[in-house]
Length: 166
Image 1 (cartoon, one colour):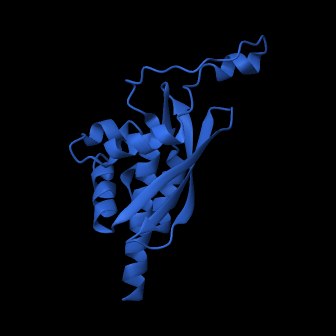
Image 2 (cartoon, one colour):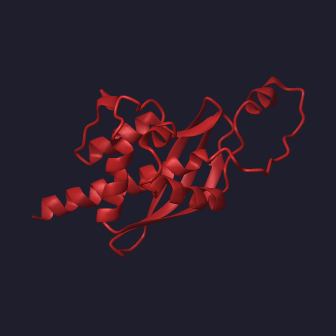
Image 3 (cartoon, one colour):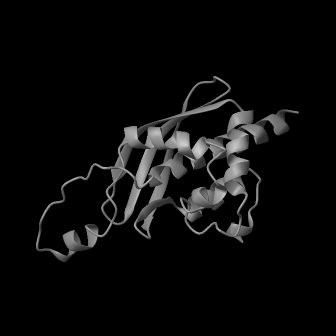
């Protein structure tokens, strides 16, 4: 019995953090743009090809979209790196989130400057104490996407599989 509850908590945590990750992509309809630094170095030129890092407030707002069952899975798949082989993954994660009374709050975003960012957050299940999570993202096709390796590792920890991870 205890093992089943632990498994459900692991799946719910996976769902929450993946949905947190899904929200980092943004909707592309934001009207604000952030100024970029002008530099002659090749590193600065390479960094300017990355999309601007979202803020914690933007991630929290976008999280609502990622949790919306009316948003097609195809849109959500585009928010995760290399998981198109599992088209039902976003719906399964959203359902697990709802079933386990999960709550998530993004607390910070760190731009690592090399085409990756990390999102820090707090996750609680069924009103329990919040746990800290860190979700890595990679810049791909002009969007921030949850890193595939992280998704697959998290699925594995929750004793879940996905065709996208084989």
